[in-house]
Length: 318
Figure 1 (spheres, rainbow, N blue to C red):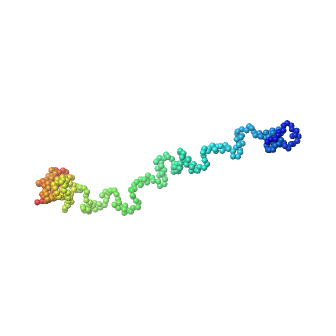
Figure 2 (spheres, helix red, strand yellow):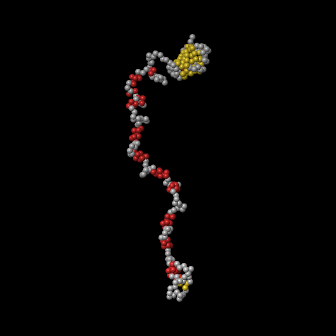
Figure 3 (cartoon, rainbow, N blue to C red):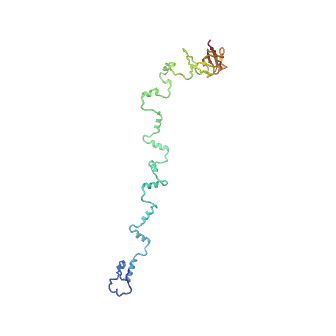
């Protein structure tokens, strides 16, 4: 609290020092705390001290003075703060940041990283097959066209370590070889007997030549199962036998020039009716029935391919 103010020319303070009068230093510093005497000069000095600042400072000057202070909010800090997104935190892990980034469209993901790692430096996507092939074949031990041709000429399963004996053995050979290039073939074949060859599976054509010096021609015997109608197959065994237990009608199949049939017909205790193709030609009487308990023989020769070409001979035991 200010003390009393002296007005005018107070004779009590002029001409000598007054210890209760506030000094100029105290007035300007504002440090006097007890009630003292203030002159008009000291009041003016105190007011002047309070307004020693520059009243017409610019904003830039004020900003410069502020930014010179410790921990002031400078332009650099302002720029840094502007670059931080709203809600950004300082405690995200690298994995969290990576996951957030990779969730973005066209982000560089681990899959793309792996793909990129697998592409050689300088690789191009516009190489032709021929260019790639040429580059590959220029490498050491490349599989070239020459090697491909060589491999194609080697059979599947071929080995390089087989013995000469196996390689020369006829049993290990495939393909064909003309008879004239095989030594002693004709002599060896001629030495074989006919029965030493495999049985033929089709007609053997003798080329119109005679079969000479034959002791016997032994035919197989075929038993025909009785039925009311029996087809005589001229393409199977020549000798047949059949036991009748009822009337019978004969037909034919596979007729051809020179084919023969000789059939032994055994009748049971009853006489059985015989029916033959109407166009067969019988040498002698054409039978119509068997005699009970008698054997008969029916001999047939085909001179063509129809029943009209068949010549028949029938005989019955006495």
